[in-house]
Length: 453
Image (tube, rainbow, N blue to C red; front, side, top):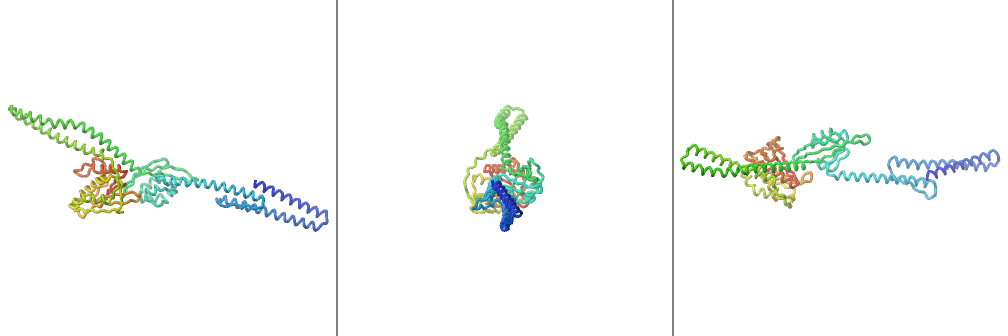
């Protein structure tokens, strides 16, 4: 509408200028009206100047409008004049276009903010980076997982894990890889999935990173429980009749041997019967031991459901040291308690957690037996991932690297008289609290068991 008014205005001015020029030449060649001729000439000059001014004014308005589009400056508005001119309609048209651009930009900003909120809120780590490792996007879950404030390049993750950096830079579209990270405060089993896309001819790799250690521990413990249930059931079905028979047969043989002695039977036969009786007694003892063994391992599948309650961790530590501190002192082991802050509370089953810590305490004492300057430290704090953490640390001989991944396997023990269920049972108790139990060891320096809730 504004453009149509502009064309009409230009057409009217052109026609008026042409008419004035025709009148000027008509007067010049056909009359001697000098004063009139001067006035018509002045009018022509005025019309030409006015036309140039009108065109220049339109150009300035159009140029301002185009600059607003070019630099995405949609805050500019064109002032509507009081007079009813074609410029008002042109400016109104420009203002309407700018308003529509503002609405489109606001909608895009709203969508961008919405997506950013989702990305930052989601619990799975996300990183978008270019081929050279330059990071374009990282969400809060990734920062929390790797304890970062910011990340500008993938290479900066070498401090966390060089293997992780190598996998991120070489992973392909649609590929899923597992990366294992171990540090002093815990253990991470990461599942990394990659998707590649292109933005303005720029290839971008988007990877999702999820810590699946909790799920793996859960499945592992579930598998062990099922295996133990099957084994104990089959073993008990086979041993029960053997134990029953081996307990009753020696009595019968004893009576038979006494009768044979009274009847003056060959002593060799009586001696053979006595040997069979002793063999059966031995079998009975071994079957009783095996039944006790099976019943012991059944405890892995019969951990009571935790009864949650709030309690001070420092009180828990004091109770444990009060019960077993004298045993440690008799072995020359010093026990230290560190809780930061002192008012740190834990929501858990106090008795079950106490059982776990007592088991770790006794293991540490056995490892430190006979070692000079030995000490055990009970430590509680809130880690960098904002989770309550309890640690039992000793300066004993440590655990060998090839053994440390096996110590939580049921039936596995590094002690001659060990049953191999203590640490497995402890980890299961932590799993029932939605927590984790991990071990870290530097031989001849320290061994650290970490409970994270």
